[in-house]
Each structure stands twice: as C-alpha cells, then as structure tokens.
Length: 121
Image (cartoon, rainbow, N blue to C red; front, side, top):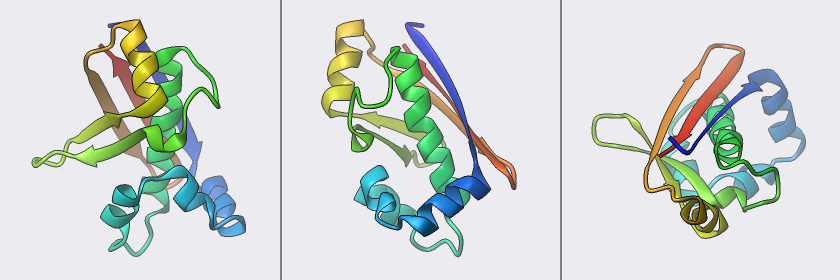
C-alpha cells in the first residue's frame, strides 16, 4: 500500500452548504455522479460520502486541497454495486508519480455522518 486516507463529513452541514450554494453540486461532482443520484428523493448523504472520497483520496496521495480538481476523482459503481474509484487529470498524474496502479474505496454513512476510506495501491 502506498497511501491511505480517511474522511468524514457531517451530513447536516453538507446539506446546508448545498442549499446555500447550489452551484457547488456541479463544481464538486461529475455529471455522471449527479445523473446516477438524480432519481433519489434525497441524495445528500450519498453526495457527502462522495465528497469524503475526494478528501480521503487527497490524503492517500499526501496532498492537500487544490492539488487537483474535484472532478479528477469520482465514484462509480460496479455491476455488483461495489464502489469503484475513477482517478483522472492531475490526480492521476500525482498517483502515477507515486507508483499507484490501483485503488480501493469504502464508503458508508449513517443518518448524520458520511465516511470514506481510500487506499492507494
């Protein structure tokens, strides 16, 4: 393992942030992620978890906010439903320099907290 990151997001705070600044949804998440969650009556917990994935990915690479664009990291689901991390752009360049060839991601949330763990392999 080359790096590991973990992050937690308070769902109520995240909901408030999205309500105050609706444009953040498009700034933070890819069109594919937004489309995948469009049918949900309330996608806030899932969006908060995906934001936690981005932060955990930064931590797994040992970089901070601004090192890459939020759209450089996204979550998609495999046929069985397991999350899969897609890393492109500057994030992929950083990962390549580190020797990262694979990723593992785990996402979970309760009613109040969204969490993610990302391992760079």
